[in-house]
Amino acid sequence: MKITTFAAPSAKDLGRDLSAVPYDFASIHGNCAMAIHDLLSLGGKGALHGASSCLGAMTQAGVETGLTAFVIEDPEGAYGTAMCPNGDDIRDAARMATRGALQNADRLGERPEIIWMSATPGAEEEVLAGIEDIVGPDVPIIGGSAADNDVSGDWFVFDRKAQSGAGVVVSALFPSRPVSFAYQNGHSPTEHSGVVTRVSGRQIHEIDNRPAWQVYSDWTGGDVQIDAARSDMQTILSASTLWPLGREISQVGSVPFYLLAHPANAHPGGDIDLFANVAEGEVLTLMNGTVEGLVDRAGRVAKLARTAGHGPHGAIAGALMIYCGGCMLTVRDQLPDVVAGVNAALDGAPFLGAFTFGEQGALLKTGNRHGNLMISCIVFGA
Image (cartoon, rainbow, N blue to C red):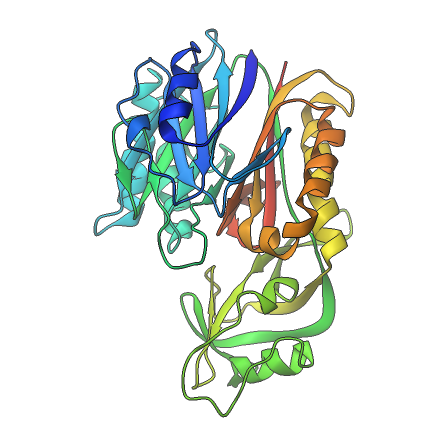
């Protein structure tokens, strides 16, 4: 197995680079402002998976503001990708994309080693359920939600045939070398917690029978400003990056693992919009992060992923990483340090990190989950 990363200022340039490589799989991520027409119907037999990423992406060479590609040459393995627009049934779209990916890998009916996915934001839980309908709950699903540069909805996903602003792209990976992975967040629990007493999908109405924004404002002690006198919706996405809401979903030893939900908007009636679903009766804990923690966490997750399957110094070919776009915007000035941390963990092996608006990963004994402000990483053995 050989892994290479490419960075290019345009789709035409990237397409030229890819045409010179006998790739079996390519995952392409970059700025939503980049036109990707020249990547559609690109020649070659390899599977092609693509999604927009907030303001660019990162590789072992640094932060890239154009388009980047993570390219695998592995003739002994099998790889297939398919994209499907959402339509009226997002879960069914995910099923069709998964079937198409398996068919394109010529492995229909077989269980892949791992699924790599990208979906446009809004119903990632349904996407995970649809993929599991086809491959079962035990296949790890790693990926991230497509992102744009300002949360205006300009995100998209694509394969070698088409592009969609509302869809899912699934890649079924059967690599010839072992893979390992990790999925974590960079925040710590505070002493504040409460029960969701009224909710509609991704909009919390009440916590402990009080308006959600009142509870959240009290918990954050004014660090996230919500003006009760205003009669319009208030965007709190940036301020809440260091103050997300967590749900304890498992424990590693005696240490609880929290899946995060990122507050996005506060409404006059007291409702708060999130980027993930929560359920009535769930306990939400206020989490707190620091810039230093978010900078260091990417390298730690890469090290965990490597150690899980290859040992801390085992030979590896490269890695695919998902790093939350909200976290990226918070630590944007320190991104060179983020890259340096990942390079140290991977001994400089090729990697690509996409900046996403939702993160998917697999957890031991808990299964595949969608969260926010998370980091996931797949490491491929040499």
